[in-house]
Structure formats: C-alpha cells, structure tokens
Length: 234
Image (cartoon, rainbow, N blue to C red; front, top):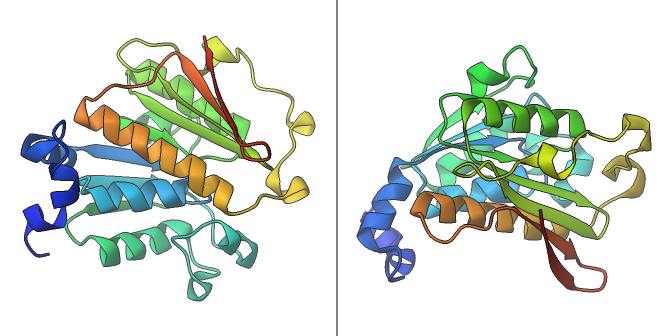
C-alpha cells in the first residue's frame, strides 16, 4: 500500500542499504519458529522492514497469560491459533508482505519439509527439543539460523550455520535433561525482555538478508538485571 520508497525511506537512506538493499528485503523468504514472546517482535520487525515472505510455524493457541509479552496478539485473540493472530497482525501492519501461517507442530518427521523452502530460519521456540531439532535440520539443509532464548532477566542470541559457521551443537553438544530446565511457567518473565531479545534476533536476520556484517561464532549474553552485555566466542 502506498509508495514503497516513502514507506521504507528511513532504512533506504542508510548508505549501506539503499534501494538495492530494500530489493533484497522484498525478495527474502524467512521462517519464524514460534509466535510467542520471541517470535512476536521478530515477526513484527521483519514485516515492518518489508521482508517479502514471512512464514510462522506454531501449533499453539493464545492464552491470557501470554499477553504480557506476546505483543502481536490481543485479548480478542485468546483461544485462537497464534499463527492466525500473527497473520492478521502482519496483514494490518504491511499488506505487501506475503504471510504463511503454518499451524503445525515441528517434529523430526516434518522438519525438513517445513524448513526447506525458506532462506533463513529464526528460532523463537521455548524448549530445547525444538531448538535442537531446528538446529540439526538447518545444518542438514544448509540454512542460516538465528537463535534466541530467554530466562527470567537474561537472554542469549546467536547466528548459527551462516556460510559454514558453527552451530548449536558445537556450542552445547547435547540438550540438558528436560526436568532440569527452568521455564517461564515456573519462574516467570518480564515482558520487555523477549522484546529486547526478539528485536536483536530480527536485527541479525535483516543483516543477513542485507549482506551486512554478521555476528557468527559468538554467543551474545544479555543480563538485564545488571545491564551487562557480553559475548562468548566459540
């Protein structure tokens, strides 16, 4: 809708992006895993930037307790599939974006089929089994993966498998035991934290699309309790 140059002018004005960079964004094809706390800001900012095709895979429905952090959803969406809410949000924000809602659970049986069509995968899932499944599938299919996770006051962001760079299993070879893993249901999360981490994930995704400098073989650690930001090389 409207003049594309006017719509995206503030990013086109960045010397390293320009018209050619906007064309790259318009041609990009990104899969977001999860439409929750991390997937919400990722989807929001990719759509706002004019990424041409965005797919979101999530099998869950919205619950009222999600609303403190899952910002693309509303009270009226409670009880509805999250991917349907995401589709409605993106359509209202940027009708030029082609959105694909995938209301399925990602499993070892279907991960290749779901992930293969996309250029870049952004993992906003909330459990280790899905994170490792997404990582292993991206390695097998040679897809770059933008990774993020949160817990209480802290978060992590990384870019895996980018042009042959290292991946999740080279940082953490095996997932922890499920019973040893703390989660938001037990320990809570302040909604702005996934907004911070998800925005960083979106930024990394845009940098990959635009062929700008990409952070890889590094894990970004975010500590909002003490406002420390550190990187670990691996």
